Length: 199
Image 1 (cartoon, helix red, strand yellow):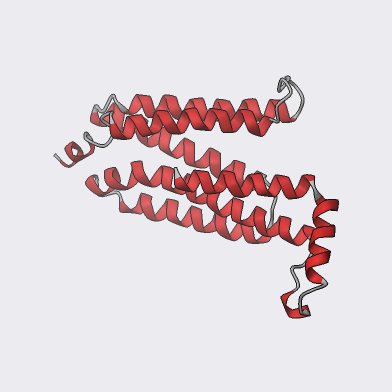
Image 2: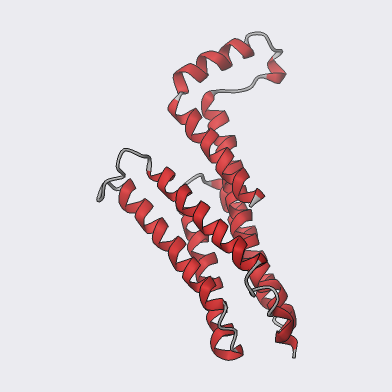
């Protein structure tokens, strides 16, 4: 949840910079005029790119951790260490991609990948190991993917966002997702059933 909060915080700052470039440019120019050249803050565009990069990294870390908390304990019990190395490699590729581009499509691809991996692994645990509780996780993943689809439709103006920014709707849905996920991890049996995998 901390990673999610950091991703949201830096994402919000990035959007604030984007929305207030003229004001920020004047503010940065005032600061730069009183600093030595080697401490120059750059431009509003430079600040935007730095914040966007941080946003990408924290989004990617959130997605990676989402996979890790479910895959790592189960993969260890089932001797599937290669799966963990695979998602670590994909996370590394995502971080490298964030260095070379700030196209949000990179985030969307990693988001889809992380959720489909968790859905597939959960279905494996349901049908091969009888852990029916993981159907709740499948439902949560599908809910989050649907929320992302709704965000895209609002962003394309195919459906109304009712006066709110599409990001606001997505963040509201993410809050519901995180709260339900937290309840499943702490009060559900997602964690308590994992030791039985080794039996």
